[in-house]
Image 1 (cartoon, rainbow, N blue to C red):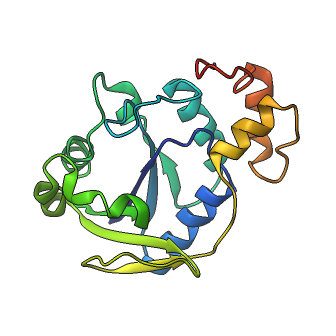
Image 2: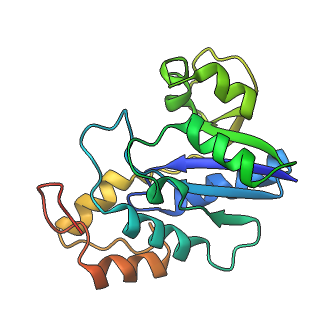
Length: 193
C-alpha cells in the first residue's frame, strides 16, 4: 500500500487542499492520501483560529465519502508540539508494510532542512514536493509535482467569516455549515472556537 501523508493547519480545510490531495493521489498513484491536521506547530507561533478538534472535524466532513482520502487525528490527539518525524514514526508503526510518501508544499519544503530530525524524515518516508502550476520552484532535491493553481487561502476564508461575507464555493458545504453552527472565526483575537 502507498500512503500519502499531507499535513497542514486546515484552518479551515478548503477546496484548494482537497484538489491538491486528489491530484497528488492520482499523479503519484497513491492508494490513500491521509490528511493530518496539525496539533501544535513548532513553526507557527500565532496558533490557530480554531481548535484542533474543530479543524479535524471539518477535515473529516470535507473528505467524507471521498474514496482515497482520509483523515488521521494523530497530531491533534497528541500533547506537545507536532513534529513530522514523530508523526511518520507513529504511522510507520501503525501501517507496517505501507510505503509512506510525505507530501510537502514548496514553501514548507524550503524549510525542511530546519525540521526536527530532517534526515530521519527521509528515512521514514519518500518526500515529494508539490507546487501550484505557474509558481516558481525553489531548488530542491527530489521529485516535484505540479497541482492546479487556485487562489484560495484559509487566511482569507477566516477574514471573510469575520466580515460576514460568504465562503460558499471556497469550502465544502459541510465545512461551511460546521463553521456557522460552531461560530468559528468570528473573533479577531485568535481565540476563535
